[in-house]
Length: 220
Image (cartoon, rainbow, N blue to C red):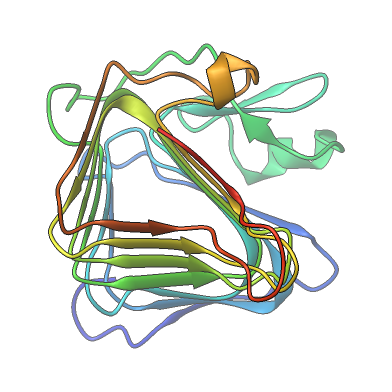
């Protein structure tokens, strides 16, 4: 979204799921609003990295998954950024999920994979950041869910760095949300991969409190 672009809008009509596959060796750079015509789920697959800077915003996205794997799983198929195109998606009728055993043809395996800096990401229900072969670096940013009781933020990668004045917020009315950083509770959910390194600086705030009930769960 560099240059004179003001925003990117997806006309999703009756489609619940929007899948964006980025095969460019430069990966993804977002610093402008991404808007869905109506509420839906956004899956962003970018093997050569994802960078979100100030100005990046996501409108009408109920759930968002960002991954640097090269593919998404469906019940009977796998969609690959490098081997498939939009026409193949007509044969994929189930909801997509992140690939737990990914391969990656990225040319930038040793570089930071998902980098979020100086911006706010606010979504309705669930956000999943996944970089199976690389790093997730979040610096001076706020990530927040607005669901009254169902919010969740999951961050998985080989290494995870939360730096500066970063805020992860998944609050609720009667129940707090769920925040998972580098794994699930005692590795009970095999769909949530474990990280090898997690670093959280002292100014970072992680909050799953509720307004009038039980607090949520934080897993690190």
